[in-house]
Length: 440
Image 1 (cartoon, helix red, strand yellow):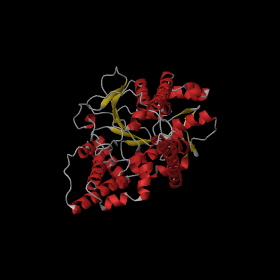
Image 2 (tube, helix red, strand yellow; image 1 turned 135 degrees about the vertical axis):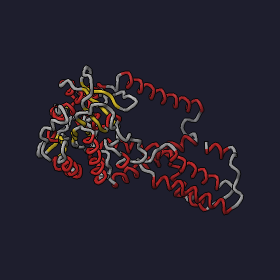
Image 3 (tube, rainbow, N blue to C red; image 1 turned 60 degrees about the vertical axis):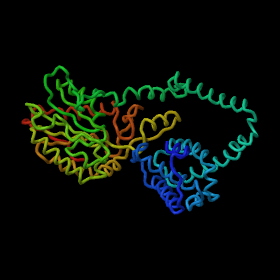
């Protein structure tokens, strides 16, 4: 719409040379602002897109009545040449980046990125001179009919290929029997199949034994708690218990989550069931689980204070507190790595070194060690079931235990059934807690 407004003359011309110069510089600066300072955290598209779009419009409009400093800068031969290659660069950079990431992982080095950029430039130059230019000069596809025929043929091949992939559900015949078995299993064990797929207006639902009259516990946390919710519900049902499941992905289960996450993240302050006077009979136990490392690495002091305040609030309500510690995190997407290994017939150790896990979670362990000294609080550590003294398990019987690089899937959560059984074992706040596990 901004470009249309310029094209049809809705914007009056700039008559002052000084104003045109200033407009061009401001427009170029706005484009550079987005290039240099926008990150993966910047909401885009959205209002953030206005800055480069308006900048481009100002830059174009400033040069409509004559040359400016900005237009001369962008009119330099090297810059113009890059502009000629821009569409080919746009087309080539993405498959190069996608295949490199698939082969080498997400964390590409500076050298690898530079190599990919050079490769994209070389391919774009070849495309420009041996594809784009011959077509423009009608050296190939010399008639309108041949151009339309080539376009329709290419389009038809794309449609046929897409239809084959869709009808065959991804052409599973391309996979080995082992890879095909895992591929069929992955959707079934995804933690998206939780008992709380549809939440109430309060962002909470009931898990466990639906025949029990009143809830005796709350299971509160972010997406890591949700990953454990189905296994927790099965354990609660076995014990004839029912409780509230309260999940907010990306939101730490603390009184003031805004202290730990970006202001753009809208996190609920406190679950309704944990407000004073929410029920006549207090919950016996509140179980808290989260991706603690994600919060402790960025704001360890804030997490320490926030958890201390939250635990004290829950204890004042008359409930005991059980905190489930961190699970090992991986430097890669586990299901993708497992599938790639199976498809290539490779042998690869996908486990996590225990020393790396401890170093990664050092701040978290320090915070939790202080919390488990408080009365009525205990911490249960999943890694005691997932790790030995050297490695942390990520695959069992050829099946991944994670759905990505940090969330357990249903198969992984089932390995923690004993831990969840212990978490739900408090029968009353007055009874106290079983002896907690040793600090790792």
